[in-house]
Image (cartoon, rainbow, N blue to C red; front, top):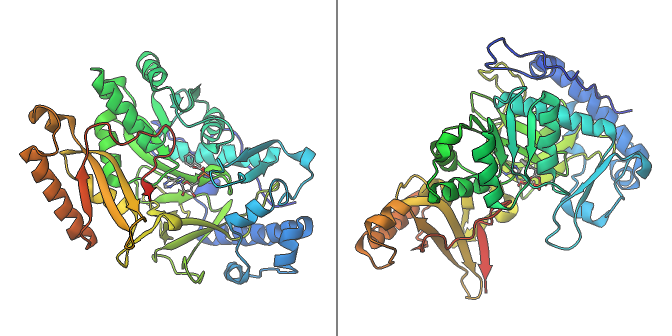
Length: 451
Ligand code: DLL
């Protein structure tokens, strides 16, 4: 069996005033030495477990037996393409009838990627989600409005199960149907909301359009994730709703949401690294990079039974920090995700992530936090255009939207200059009419290709 003790359902780190609560004191504050010992023990077990039970892993891992954590770097990577090739159940390490649940990615490019859980795996998932939500300040008895999609996507059910473990009251609204969200937010007055940051902004915008003030809903905690977002979006969400916004990260292949999340110090996301072992590698060469260097996050599941993965290439770009955090947790932390390596655009030889455009533009109060990068590959030199919308206040001041209005023309010039200074590229920028950029109900689409 893979070593994997799951903590009791009762939180043991909650201070009487509820501040700075830690769900699992033992696991989240263990000493670095104890953490490394546990990680090595679990790594050895998972490598044995995967090689003994899954032909795909056996062929690649052979008789590998890591003696120290550093030996991990000698093992082969697993990629998303491997999951597709093994569709649907080729990577299972347990008989199919021992699965408690299956999830899958949306599969926009061909077959979906299937992931599977035993009952123990679901228990680990609930545990890590309870940790992350507690770190964000969610408490037993809080009412939680879940706006992540339910179904094969891991967002809805992941938050749902973790919230039930904490003892929250769950409202499983799921994604879509903005009018229903508005009604329930106004009538139920939840303490907390879980959503993609872009959908939450959309909710704030539509509420304001109908004359109600999102701040008056009384939301205290926002838990956001499933797509890259920046400090600019955080500020916009906190301003709109008057809540504190926390970043929660995860991916279906590893477990779903709950791989990492921010605490009250908001100095990086704590990784549940007693269950998921992180590494950073050079996205091109795959060579391991030291803490503090930016690169691609690679994760190894230390306790998953149904579908263990050793050295899974997440495609997500971040950095790791190992130092202690003010909150008392001792896990490794990762910086907020800059983007996916496959979302990186190369514009006239310069690497560019949509999040860099976002963090530059969102500091401007005449713009709203909805933008899109339109890439035209129809021309010989790929052309990039940034589209962004003006704030309703500015449009009202101009007496309606017109791209030729002097204030809009000036705003366009200033925004383009700001981008040029920050990114070092002159990029075509267009201020488009309010509501032109599509609002997503799930993950926002930041880059669209034309031509
Ligand atoms: O998006 C799981 C999730 C649901 C996480 C709800 C957080 C909240 P997938 O659909 O498999 O799973 O997509 C995983 O989404 O590799 C990242 O590229 C991106 N992603 C997830 N969380 C964040 C985040 C879920 N907090 C992919 N910041 C990952 C940036 C994120 N990107």
